[in-house]
Image (cartoon, rainbow, N blue to C red; front, side, top):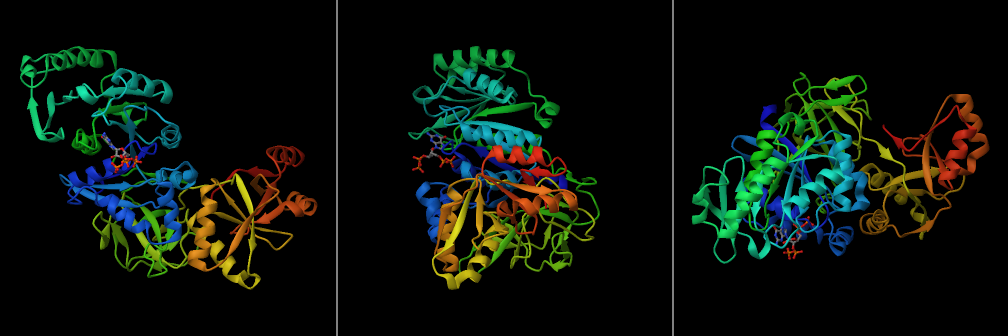
Length: 520
Ligand code: G4P
């Protein structure tokens, strides 16, 4: 079963066409019947609460979801990554749950800031990348220029797999180097509706029957240059993350969409082993294991439900199975797991390595938890990051202390914020990686917990987890109480006034470790 799964994400800068490509992939994969449904459903979902309306105003997607479709006997699990830079932490964690990625570029814009950031996360985890250069139906940059930019900015070899026959007004189709096939636009809308022509190669005279003289020359000349001037596709190099196959297309007009699905099927890795402290766990291990990479509350506003997203690493999951969360130590029975088919949520009976299972729970499962049958392994690599923005939470109605604490605990479990309880003083401190999370926090406090709160500047610039032996730690605690807090797990956190402050304390306390990330 494992070899028949592909778990992947799309990485891109906002507006490059991720939503459109997602829709078309699902459409081709037979998961939805009308393009536009992803967006429509997204809008309906977004309208549901104040929190969601922030996404809408900003035109961004805060809600990460999982879409599953099947084609030619292969199950594809597409994980949606939030595209906004403010959610880099969330995005990072989602990328820990995939085995490969598609990088979507706008042909007019090339590599943009967010593409670069997301690419770096993929590289860090050796996630292989297939590139889709989108919007060739519009004026864009020269294909050669785009290939060179990828190579330079990402230090990645590029192997062109197809070629645009002109762009924008001059667009005449796409030439597929692998199959020696020409994909042709039809009708006024110039969409791809399945019209293809097989030829003997880019110099075949038959192309003249379908393309203008310019187009024929383009395929012959540029095609030759593309194949001679760039590396040929190399499977090992792709799998190692040293080379990306590049497909040109138009998500909107459906050029290159099936090529991308086929490429994922042919080249992308099946579920990969995942790291633990004691070596890797392979998919064929005879035990169900997985890790929680995301927790989302209130997906259904009628139920105060909370879904933990588990990436299954090994074994065959069966409904009702008992799994033990590493954070809890006692087993829970997973009676109503959810698989996220694009049409609707469906109750799963079985799931396999590479699948994502939604597990409804009331706050027992947290991001970073390992779930397993035997409770012997712990997956690593899902850190919390030191927040770069810290705020003091000021409660408007002091009788609501309890609700506030509950809300902050909940939201920190979800990974929306981190919460710190100072050793001195009563106000809670929240930490986030990006500004937008603060707005999400305030509006969710109000909408979901009926707590009115203001966020005030805190005199701290960043936080570090402090670890060390008893004596050194006690000593440090004695002198720095005003700058110390406990996180949600009771671990000690040093709230620093400036990065300089961190360095100073680290030098002064060589026996302690000041860490910018924490793994539970
Ligand atoms: P995102 O999720 O990466 O942010 O991008 P999205 O798919 O929403 O696409 C951003 C805009 O680019 C949309 O236009 C979309 O229609 C357009 N687009 C996507 N792919 C293509 C393509 O292949 N060719 C062309 N010409 N345009 C494309 P919009 O006007 O912002 O939105 P809409 O009103 O069309 O939905």
